[in-house]
Length: 484
Image (cartoon, rainbow, N blue to C red; front, side, top):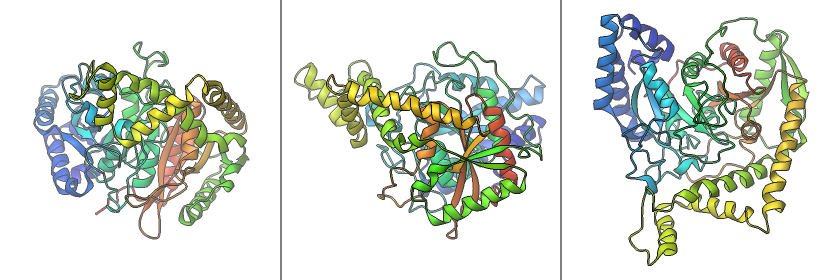
């Protein structure tokens, strides 16, 4: 693998800015790596090589002229295919949006353009981000680079696989119920979901609006913190985006005493679920390492954890039903030529262009929002969601972070099924709007990566990065190791 891509995004940024490495060479290295790995991994739906090289050349010219540089000047990045880039296709891995061209930039894209980042291509995903394996994509299935017979996780599996395989230094994804952090755990990289409202969602194809957040993938915590420092911040176009000014999240990531005096909460409810043996053994070793670093391990309890899968399914599907209502084949997207009338056209447009998983969630979401079921299902789920949030806030009175395995099971082969509780501790962060980050911890006896998950209080993202970076230094995971 090209040495340029092994140094990480932050160091690559420094070398490009100093002129030691050209942006053009970095971009060419990405496409060379993609040509070697993409036939087996299938991480990308679309590549922008011609445009990327033009942008890279412009960055190199800026550097040579001594002009003011962006924070990510000339650095390559992958973009999940549910984030709008003006003038480019955005399919959300669905046939419905096959010919859709984005009329404007998402806020995160605007900020990346201002920072000088170079877009390498659009990464594969589960259709409309509905799925946890990247198998529901209408176009292709992405493989886990560590074992191409297994899933990379989802829905942001394309972005995870691209970073894990070394195709790009980092990538954007979206996280609705662990869709960044779960595939990051499966592929041995860092996956981060921000506090709800920290990063604007404007220009992102909505799945479930009270859960969705834009986040990132990288090989190390500092690269993630660098990217978040660029894309976070207020945006009047997203009504839930907080008015806080942009911040530097790379600050204080090298403190050797981060864990001294920290209280790390471990959910009592973890013992209620089946955890794969290799994950359980690794997690116990991780707890021991934290103790050796001066952290205090405290048991916390949130009895409503047991309701997390049901809460997520009911509320998420209800919001899916509402958001997908705009996909009628009239205003944009696929329109069936077989409709005999307006209602028939609506029906056939969806039947012919949407996949099974999307249809299933629309039907269930419409059911729980029905007049007879609203209070019994949706309203009750929102009440229990509030109960869970209150329990987690009470737990944070006893600890600084809640710590758990990233996933409770190892990735399965294509066509396999993960247990419903696999991502239970990841989904809780979406239900409560809390920030979460997955960090690689070790390898299983079969050579598959495993990870851990830190969840913090709302808007404790800076401290979350500090804890994750400190754990990174004591883990048994070699971040310079790439899958063959």
